[in-house]
Length: 610
Ligand code: BGC
Ligand code: BGC
Image (cartoon, rainbow, N blue to C red; front, top):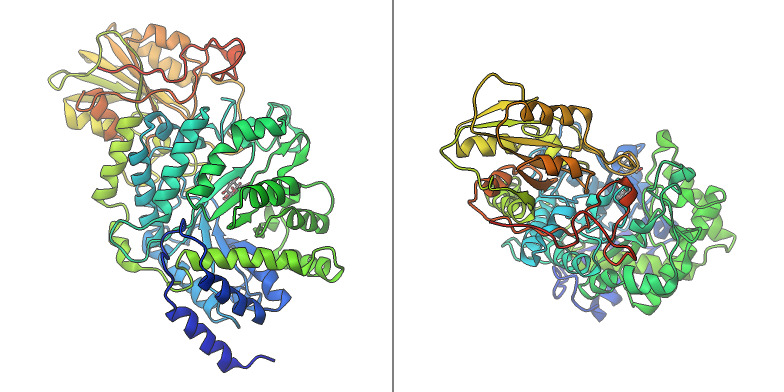
């Protein structure tokens, strides 16, 4: 039995230790950290080690005390898993409450707390919401992408949270995939550069506070954007998400691995396993990928997290799922405890894991390797020294400074596809502004905003595109474009409603009836008009582009809609270039640079300016 006082002494030693380069996850693995890990691990029971390898969604905790009783290593907030009242201070309070319980456990190892802050701290009301990755890929501006991630890290750290499940460095190849917009590009180089910029932004400290240290997560390893239509979850013929990718090892190395190699060089702390299969084998059960390739060959020394109930999709029962995934090199399991959504309880996970260990089906050596990796990242990120939230950062959350960075990112991500002497708009003219996306913050933010799938309407604070336009000139808003008034020209803002995983899979990438009707209503006015398209992916709009005088793609700009109007009015010239090829019709989908009969409507890299 270890003496209580000895543990306390040890904890004080941890908290007063100075770790060189603690904010810089790219720094070398110091011998000092490894020896501290040795001393902690010498004290740990196997139950405590399994606890470190367990991640629970906070909303599914039976009682908060379970964090201490089971020595839980990590919590997450999945999409929409917020405190009862969704505002910044409430998140910080929630985090600190959980962390206090973790620190009261026998060993007092702090929790690493994960969240999907994939375009700003997007679960939190009032956060600055940046363009989704598809827009950042079209901007293809390293410094802008880094600044976006840096500002995101500050807002995340303001709530205490220290781990971001971002960047998604998928090479998204099929426009029908509901996660297309989470990828930067179909081009390996753009994905690689933006991925590194983003990791640098999350993991290093430059914005003047001492407690910013948000661990990045490169996801989803590997081939998430390469799945075949019709092989979706449970082999749904009308789905693609979580499907099967038919890719050879040499293709993996040539195309999908380079962004991960660069991410590891940039010091990424964690990698997430992907839901998809490769040639029929679920990535979560693919030891070659994690043990041999990622950790062996590439020398990744951080830890691998599973995806949400991702091990549950491995064929076999839950116990064999645990054995397969852990032995394949997954170090921490996102359980997450969602029994009501077909998941397993974390207590089931923990007891089956222990049973597998007792039966020798998972070795202590494998467990020790996983725990060492987890503790290494907890040390390197500065979490061991500063487990509690730094509330001085709260004043930066949703701040003018961050919104200015978002606005710049929006400006640079606009892609102009057509312009027949219509743009830029003039400040002394009278415009009609209409369409389903003109005045809707939820729509311009897209999925992964406040809720998992996002939502329409007034879901958070920000500036709509309409508000941006009306600051520039005299303008009139009409949702459907029906009006008796007379106008010089019209701006029609239309496009996709929010979606993400699974629900966003679609093989009919057309405008809605409502949007088509709005265009028809505007055409009846016989005035020039420009279309602004809100979308997570190229849509089939060949006819609409033909008919319009100008056509601009705004992607999913986020809360700073004035970044769109800045470009419309020529305060900033359009500079975005397509980071995805744009198909002509559904027969042309999927379309990617390098295809044998490459013949899109617009090629990769297209984008006009004035
Ligand atoms: C997604 C991941 C995400 C995780 C946690 C999963 O469904 O695939 O990208 O990080 O949930 O929310
Ligand atoms: C969670 C998400 C997660 C998804 C996966 C949702 O209920 O909120 O974070 O990505 O489930 O299926």
